[in-house]
Image (cartoon, rainbow, N blue to C red; front, side, top):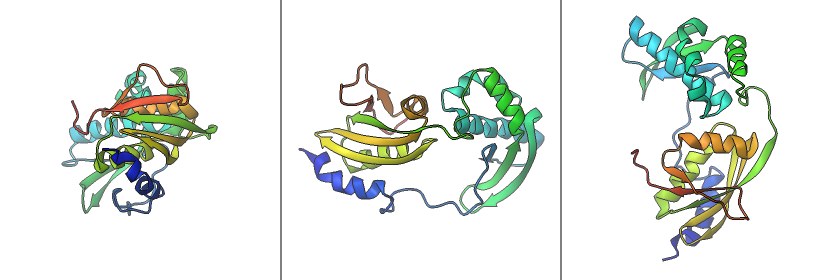
Length: 213
């Protein structure tokens, strides 16, 4: 059954943010480039230090891409030394949160020393990347993939353009272009890169389902 082409108009509307299938908007103040929030069970020193490392991991991924997490492992481990300020907030859904802000200059120097980019802080060229996702079956899979793409660091827009069988072609507008999108998708465990992309797309992935292996 050619279900995906029938759902393409729905996806076009959803990609514009007109359907309520994304998570509820956050009411907390926007975070700066070198800040992050992490749910914690308590305010003990041990929990705090581990949460600071998780917060810095999020910062590194946001400013340098998902692939930077592994290269910057030593930087992340030094989070308690790099933190400038931290505090706690209560959230109605997530409970107790640690909110941490890090020394942007120090983090930037360490990342640059590892030859990692700083996309999330300084504007990079915005490009439209032609992306193909195959293996999509059912409305939930289509919307889950588009939601995942819209949530990646640097992504400004996702516009589905063509649907054939279980394959969806789309344009992903992203700061940093195809290189950054490829790196960001390393964290998308449900998407596996295809060994070779067709001539009419830049990147191709196959949907493997929502369950983490």
